[in-house]
Length: 195
Image (cartoon, rainbow, N blue to C red; front, side, top):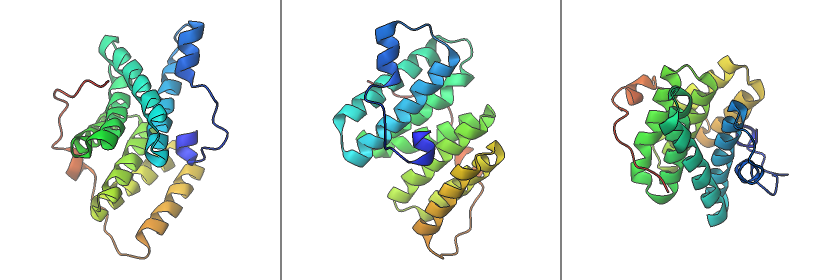
């Protein structure tokens, strides 16, 4: 919820991944999702606060998701999660390599019909392009994220993003391109192995 609302007050002192490893908790699918979101929050806070501890927590979450992605029969559940976490990691260390992973994350989420995760990957892609000054691409991915969040029924998240977009783009007239224009050329070939 922290990554969707962008409210990082009252974060727990200890992450889910640490608690899972210490307690030897049986693995359930809902816990995979929790570790994924922990990775998103960790990499986001690593960028925001320039904090290496958060970066290491993000890498641990990425390694966990990568392990399940490589060992699970149902790869589609982990592929897009791996791609978005790897994009965020690379965005912090080697931004030139991050773009393909953001695009792969959006494409994988879309193809596997994870509309909420397509929204997350699209919003993070929009952030990436905005930081790099690519206004047209940024706007296109933000628009796609709003559509995904709306389809998902996350009205508060959609409203939060609409307000962010209005603040970032003022009253400029920008025409959103369909994201298929950007994601169609990206494949799923070999990717870096993290950590």
